[in-house]
Length: 297
Ligand code: AMP
Image 1 (cartoon, rainbow, N blue to C red):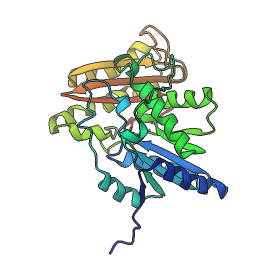
Image 2: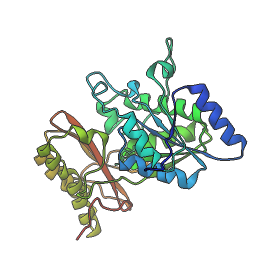
Image 3: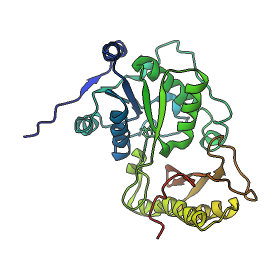
């Protein structure tokens, strides 16, 4: 018989706030991990990290409508609250916050948070309202939960930079922490959207991590020409996937795109978004900083 205690699930905003107030009144630090659910080991790694740096871990599960554009996968996005609760019960999470769209966006809702510049390129170019939706919902979650620390994945590198900048610019009293991308044994970055992939798409999706690993290999060997590093990713991914959204080399701090003729500094972001069938996958790595997706040998 399992002795794992079921995790507490609360949908009501006032109730979650009251619970977090009690934790803070006892002098403890609340940690927050915002997610859209359909949890995998990547999410659970963020929960582990949050439990290392805070006393009480709140995981939010909310498929946020405002970060999906028209025609995107809001309706078919995987939802599995029961499975998520079971997974979280086995980790050091204390509370799951599951608000409804109606409570997060009541009639008359008309306030948004916009982070400029960082949201212009990469995913922001093809998803022009996405980061406004993300920044707005994360602001709401910060205001409801009041975390002293919040953990986000580097898998969504641009999102992490946007949230860090927002917290800094708006003096939000929260430390935003980035956690490394969790990958399957063969290198594929874990994503709730991997569930959409057919067996052959799943196989072709390996070109993403393989390309990023190839760029690490070149960088380790001393290559600093941005074009050569970017093409190490571009060539295999273009050959194996159906529609490239972008494969970009950029400054990892400002996200400014670098031309192929540029020379890489000590760190270089290579980020990509591509489609396999109807599934959009993203991945990235920071050369000179991240571990490669797969061993270099
Ligand atoms: P999502 O549920 O996809 O919105 O993601 C919730 C959080 O989990 C975000 O901070 C993501 O960056 C993070 N995340 C998603 N996939 C991974 C992964 N494979 N490794 C690390 N973090 C991840």
